[in-house]
Length: 307
Length: 308
Image 1 (cartoon, each protein chain N blue to C red):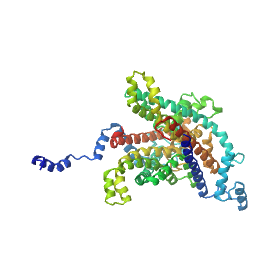
Image 2: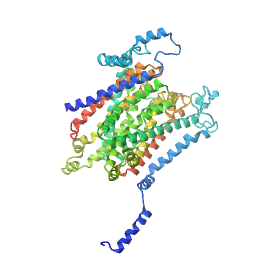
Image 3: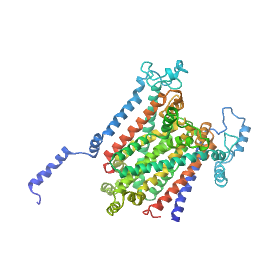
Image 4: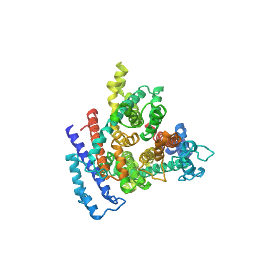
């Protein structure tokens, strides 16, 4: 097991480095620096500013300094746009918000999706199955940026039940709509994957044996079928995490929650490379870490994997 | 001879019989597809959407960037969808004809989907076929590269690219093309591994056909079925990606528009009672995605029936 973890780490770390290099290469390839505004600055002023941000150093040194500062001091450098805060400040301010509703939508998508999928598989070819399949097909065409306006239209403008934006320290009524909007389409995918893998497991020999022994159905499902049926879902969680964290950009922007997504888009409009790159690298690191955890869980649950 | 005359005659007739009753795999697939009612309905919806997107401009009474200044401030009452004013879908917040804009948005979305799928088909199939056929260390390196690229949150890198090289449709095409082929490469490789062991490939190797020629003439044609299916299923996800970026305002720029940008505009105005501004783009979007999913599903059932 330990050797397996080490081997996975040996892939994860280069992946992260490649992401850093890609980000830097893109930035160096950019026509014009971040301070080439509409009014051209005097050359001396520009040179001073670039020296202040370390942009006059050779590329490899900029990159090495950046990685060193991030890894050792958790310092993503100064923002090019906001003079009064660093990228780290922005991340520390926005990230807890994104993490809060991201966590809840992950939980909702997983619990609802798995329950729906299991129910559909156990009651295969009954109205419950058709309903679950219908819901998951319908939800699949409703990505977060379609779901969010629809939810606000119905629950805020027509029914007036929930606020259509804001955060206010994460009070529950401000969290509900973002969570639903973010989780819908992944819940659908999870439900579909659970259903098909559960159907396959329920048709296999050891389940028939369990049935023949006269075990109650719920016990067969929870004790015997759940573990193998969950494996495909587990391997989908990595991609699902990427979708979620990407979707949070839309959620932050649409619901004005003040999460990192909002800073990300604003920086994209202001060409604030430092913030964009900091967030990209942070998100990349999280994704890679998450995939690592999923892989280790997979190896731990699945007895067929030898490591 | 062990075979009597009658059997021999029958065998002599056999090629002709086979010609009469011959059914290719593709013909079988077509029969199965036509029998699938959901897929057929979706196919007709899709044709309708394509006609709307490419010929809808001829029906539109206004240019997509014509601003009707007389509607300023009176959008909620006078920009209502109606046949008489010629604004079939109403007007948007700036007094532009929403019908013409939805036509254009749908067209851009379809184009992005098709370009993404085309890149995936060409690059992904060749990459996967080469990795699978060559095997060994080359395969390991090629597929590990795909693994690494796939575990990077690409939307962020794509936005970084759009910011650095400027926001344009061309950049969007390039960015989407860069990510779309990864899944296809995996699928093509998996399929190539099974084809590689077949006799006809062995025969080709034995007769001294060059590896590149084997890949192009013997492997790729046999990948086509699965490639077509996944390309169809890839189109909606490309459309979703493009709309996502345009929703943020980072994708297609004015005066051009796309379904994502239209949904975003509609969403920011819906509290002013101009509900049609969001309903029409969302309907166009959802119908398009739905249609592609069902056609893709139907194709999968038709071409790859064991995978039901």
